[in-house]
Image (tube, rainbow, N blue to C red):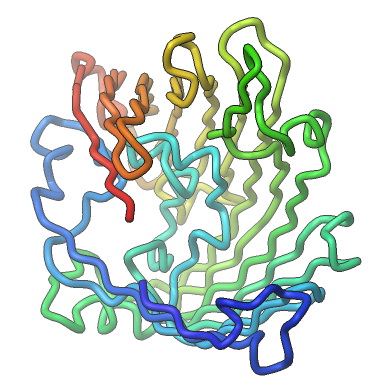
Length: 340
């Protein structure tokens, strides 16, 4: 990700109008077998980065940041997420149905690394977000396949024509929010929090697909809470739902998920995070008759080696693979995260 702005090195209170503006350019490189899940009989990839191999353009945009103001705007080519549907608590998981976008499956959605021309408005009433945050975006999806294949990638999806509109409201002003604004105090030490703040997010999207002649709408929401639990130094519980208005055009009209995150379960490892999650995807009885729901359970542990490197061993159990009565699938893996 390359970002340029004269305001990057200035405190927001010192910004002038030119400092609000920034340009963004992002490229992503994928390699590996994106069809591993199909080879073992599962409907969804076991990791969120399973995409056709090659170099992708994943953003090229001009953005006006709000700074200490209320309104921000972005225009160019970019993805639906992380601005919409995605919420920070989901980043802790590896499986594609749990990580990121509540397993949204409407055809033609520009979910990263897919992009489309669009414009996004971001409004914080009151400036400090005490009334929550509103986001609205409109995408033109006709160019999505061409943008995905710009550097020779086979997009592995059909061409769609039409437009998408989405509206979202979120707030972090929830019970327990103030308590997690400060570091953890433990045995006379100040420990950085690794878990995201509490959050409520509600939204809905409308997709007009001129290629198929279908219109599709969906509603979604996530709730993240910070309950005082006896295990660990800091905990989060979350619930998420994605529900289509109709199951006649949406292949997965209902997704339900939830989980638990705990920091410092091991006293000697106060910065490590344990994550448990479950997600169930119900297939459309109209589009996929005879298929029920595929459910994934994931247990992972983020082992912080140092400030740049963490290891995340993961164990996944997939029940009713592809919505069938097939035997459950047990999968183990290791994710490495390197940051500079």
